[in-house]
Length: 372
Image 1 (cartoon, rainbow, N blue to C red):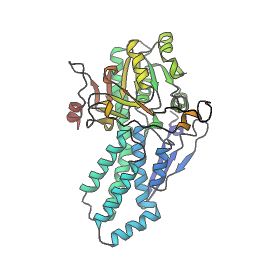
Image 2 (image 1 turned 135 degrees about the vertical axis):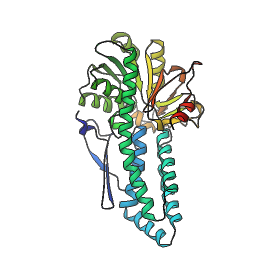
Image 3 (image 1 turned 60 degrees about the vertical axis):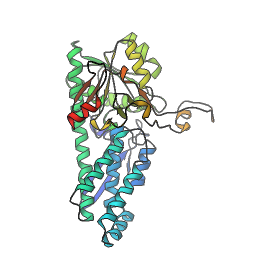
Image 4 (image 1 turned 180 degrees about the vertical axis):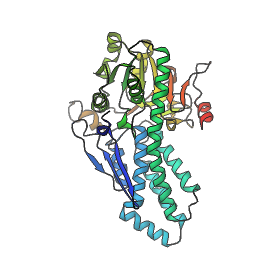
């Protein structure tokens, strides 16, 4: 695997100084350039501009950005010096929590960011934090742990997904996969979620073909997933426009759609990149399985159903400039849609595959309680 081309970030921490860069995904696939993240403003901007994207990666970049800000941004370090000097660990914590709140304002739909900040807040609150160094070290340690955990979780998602699919799809050449958006190494700390399932099938010699939907309007499928597919030399590669999915399935055949998720509700309704809902309807109509692959941190049992999810709308320019439209044409540009649970076959996580019960419903709450 030429994984180095697909490394979404670099992070190092030596002698109390953190160095952090992110791969500028808006420049891909034609240019590979890494941008330094020096403070939380840089991290916020990288997330908001979609220089980095992918629900798991957004959360990781926010936490690593905080780690860099607290250890290596001179302005923050002197602010912490003052708070520390004033004798207040509480002051230090308040400052850190304000920074976390700011990072949460970057993008609204993916729940991983909010879950990561909650987890981090718990660590800062609970850790035997008697000093400012304790707080900073706890955050840096957790940031590094998140990086490792994401890759191992993704490999487990891949293995559970491949196991599940191969139980039913027994063609000697393996499984024919369709996917949308980018859920690979570029969307995560490495390996990927839905694309990680394809990677694992390929590793076992059981990926028969993979079709990537272009993913309008920002083309994460054509710019990013196609790039990963080519880099990994996946078998049976095919890029298609979003509007070609039904024709592709009819003409070429498919066994399973595997997609990512930004938020999965208690009833299984799933927010993902715009166009996912459409693909799910086509899959159901054409008898193709439809799987969501996402880490446990994407499951949001606080929201009962998809109509409670805040759907981010992106600037019109992202649609107009990428489509050759006349300047100033009015448009509607939601970044996500919600696929109702009825269209979803199963939800693949690192803890196993969640299937519907005898009542035909997903018990996400029960699954989360069992594995938490």
